[in-house]
Length: 254
Image 1: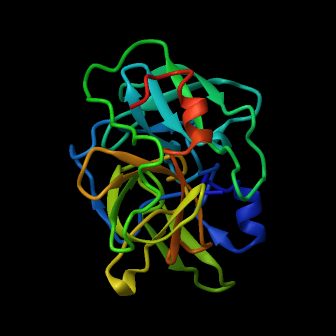
Image 2: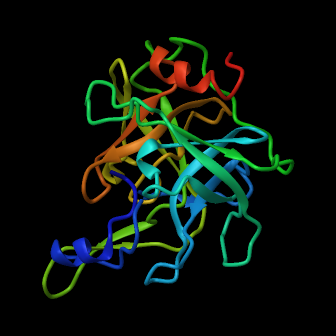
């Protein structure tokens, strides 16, 4: 869901300035070099607003980039990944092959919405993120802070005239901190309500990481949230047997 919405559909439902498919960081700050292992999937052509990145993700080994299964682009499994903190056309990209969980579907209890890109060459400029141990997220306190990182929309503003909302993109990697409000067998639900001092994700942040506090432990990946990106960031846990079964094919697990 947090991929970027096609422009024709956006116009039909009163959203301006969205092109392509993917979710983004709101009420956050530019990430700079804080998370150099967080990257974005780069479209083959620029969107109508001049931006390129449609989903986010994280390096979990020198050649394995973790993202969401719903970030697949049709039947083409060849994709490009950037780790630039402020992407511009011509910046370094890494080509690779997209592999989604074959069990991916619409089961709300466990959608298996997880994928990796196996890169053609290793990334040597960043240290891979750490994955959580099996079952380690089941009893997180409600006060747990979660740091979300991604390239999604950095702001959502009401549109003038016909109504709807404008989702603003700039291909800059951002981060925001939210507070855990619920844990289920597959999900961490994170408050990103700015009225309570929280921030979170939006369209374009799909597949991007959610770290435990200020640590390098990657707890979950961004999957969905509310329509105007102000209430809840819904993230897919990486400590479950489902996620670990998929990831074990590509990386060594803790």
